[in-house]
Amino acid sequence: ANALNGIGVAYYEMAKYDSATIYYLKALQIAEKLNLTNVLGKLYLNMGTLYDVSDKPKEAKRSFFRSIPYNEQMNSMINVAKAYHNIGNIYVQEKNYDSAWYIYNKALELNLTLNYPHGIANAYIGLGDVADDLGEIKKSNEYFKKAKHYYLSISDMQGVVISCINLGRNQQQWGNYDAALQMFDTALLVSREFGFLRREAEVYRNYCFLYAEKGDYRQAYEKIRILLALRDSILDIEKQNNMAELEALYENEKYKAQLLGLNIDKLEKYLALEL
Image (cartoon, rainbow, N blue to C red; front, side, top):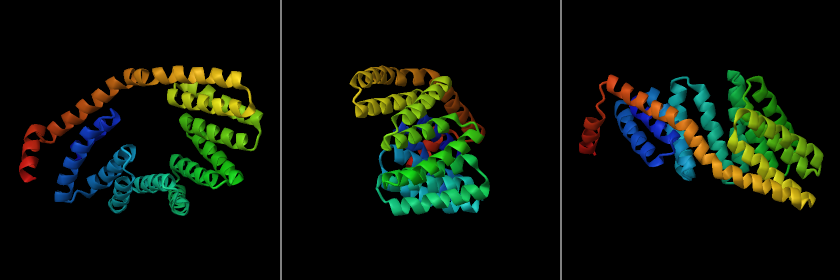
């Protein structure tokens, strides 16, 4: 079951969501039959993530909630905090801000107890997003500042970029265009230095809105041109960079399955008979 879950993860990372679903469900069938608590916690968490990117929020939320008791039994409290955070993200999508606020705070409290900086930073980003959507920009700004601090403390530069973009948007809402541009410029510099192509595109998208709002349409048009060029190249470049690693991950998980005595072809036939 653990190996099948790993193969599902490999397919998920390659964006082959149908194949990932097949292997997750096979893993789930075995794990539930044998009551493999150590597998069920992370498996439901993985399935929730898959459903989330597949635009199935109800199934995602249900899977995240199901993961919590199993991870609590295994004392995998970081995974519990991750589930809380992911559920909070879905509540935000549903515009259920009271529930989002409550569960992001649960994630924050747990991450603070665990002294897990990455989880703390993510929780502050979530709380900042809720405050922003509710028009509480000052409160939002404080949360994004705290998130940036924690991301910097663990050298999570992508988190720093996300924080800078959000802080820039807040400054833009206040009409502080120079301060907003400074934040966007910082986000762009870090994105380029570390090769965060998607974040770089996000920065240019924000440049477009800012310059259009200022009435500087020449600059807005120039940023749009760059943004379109970036978007054309992102998928091909990311595939080239990641494909070898993802294929190696798939082969490794397949090999682990064989070591565990799981012949995938025979297992598939067995499961088909069971069904």
